[in-house]
Image (cartoon, rainbow, N blue to C red; front, side, top):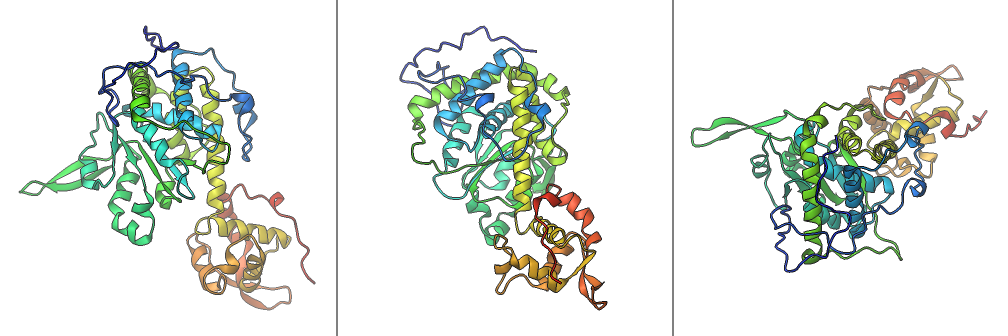
Length: 437
């Protein structure tokens, strides 16, 4: 399972200058040796892993580590290289980036092509620097700066797809007008997540229909969240601006690219014989549905590498997916309205129904919720109805305690939506408030 590379890599020599490395073209150089100063050991291990808010099942944390292998040492070395230039938001995020890079070298084995969404709230959070490192370590990088969708899907082959690297995605999807103008790019990124999703275009003077492949792994970096349909498919890395005292190594092409290309070549040489084995593996996943589709290649890479990586991959998967579920529930245009209504019903002692007026009153009373400032004068009955209709929940006549009837919402109409879209919001999340009267 672990093909051995006879060439030593644990004690690299100083790179000899001048090097012939070409930025963005790993493997196009005469093999350079590892640059001096790269620490192959990861910064921190299981005992120093960040305490994530999401609770990780104990069976994942307690997965026993195997003996280090050639593959696990390569992944450790790659993680150490990435950590020199960027500070990811957590150790789990650093593990995920490492696994994603190695997964690009096994793309023909995957049914789904995981996206890596590198997002941050502002400039200078390290997004572009991370893409610099990815460019030199992923399989066949294709930078899409000012590249048309037509050129991209004409560059994708089914046998050996490139790895798409999209920087400054906020200039593509940042406003509704931009997103509408770049709808074809969004469609390409969405379709390419799954194998056998094609786009058909007419080509040539005789306008012959031709199918173009879209399947390719992609890293997408930008300020703020990407469109909802794109954010539903990636491993999300939420970068932060460096705090005072946090330091990284400056990225210098002449000095650093040869070392990254050398590591790229060794990872590719290790992964190539494992292609068939990777395609046959179906690991048990700690998450379900689309999240499982996205993370499965990363977990398979970890299992192939062995060592401590099977545990690290599953812990990262469980914690990072849970964090994104919580973020989705907090998004006003997503399941946030359902989660807040769940809390209102619990605070009102699980009454059978609430009038629209009473429900709006309680929603607007939450100082941490957006509903008091929604629109011009706060969330309205019309807007509430529009948001809930997306979840197939409609208002109707409800009987009040004083035996009158008003327009409102029945609690049992929400049960299925609560279970599907905000399952982590439990009654324990809110303190019951005695009803007036």
